[in-house]
Image (cartoon, rainbow, N blue to C red):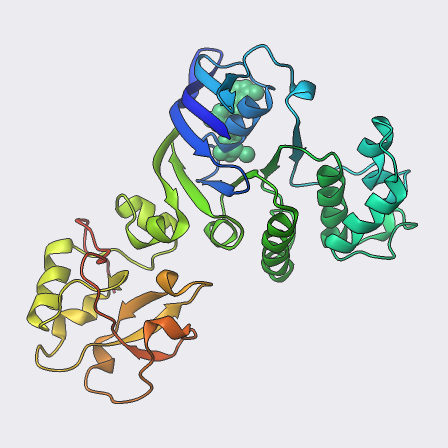
Length: 332
Ligand code: ADP
Ligand code: MG
């Protein structure tokens, strides 16, 4: 298990990462999510041993890694641009680490890994003949070939275009699960974090502002800024939103961002909603209360049935899951 305790890193005396605590249990994927410049890559570099700590400790299974050089940590790194050896075939790229340590059956292992990343039969190709997505799959296979006890991923999909990025995110999750890999991934893309990881740490200005299983972070963001960064459409003044829900005779409901127009809700009418974003698990379905939907009797879907974007649903009531905050009212 990877543990960070009070980790701080400074560049020329200027703090880039401050007092970060993180734990990553074996076999899980933790996404560190935050805007550009918040210190994500710095954390990864500190874990890899590429950046000295100005405070705190990084340990593995309780053993402090201070003084353990990068190549002895048993970690593998994968960057945005996978940095393949251009003159080596796909198979030789993937087999690089196993051959270095003279592992038996390298060819067989390479074949298995190429199959895992969906590139069976690509072994003889050169990197220059591959698409960006294929190259990144090869880079992933090469990183896994080293059999790292921890895989460090720095914005692994950011160089790819949107459609491909989304597909590869789904594949990346499946590949890491199949391989049972423990991974720390940093990204600025909340969709990527939601798709790939089990847990999430949200960073801002060098600090972790929230950490937990992704469904929990999504359900109850720590503050309005976090909510907006996670992709909530808007955050409404808590008092007003709570009053609307109370007037409608509803206790706080599942992860709801309330639209300004909801203020005109008819308290006696049913509370309808339009799904504006739907994710892999039911807990992550995000709803926006839509005043126009009040009284309509169409398509009622229980929240556990993965309603699609744009579908009308009746608002599921689940006390303790309201996600609205004190903040300036959004213009609508
Ligand atoms: P992120 O990966 O979240 O975009 P980084 O960890 O790369 O952020 O950077 C965090 C902060 O540290 C930024 O303000 C950045 O300018 C600064 N920084 C990063 N690397 C260096 C460096 N080698 N020297 C000086 N400042 C750096
Ligand atoms: Mg970075």
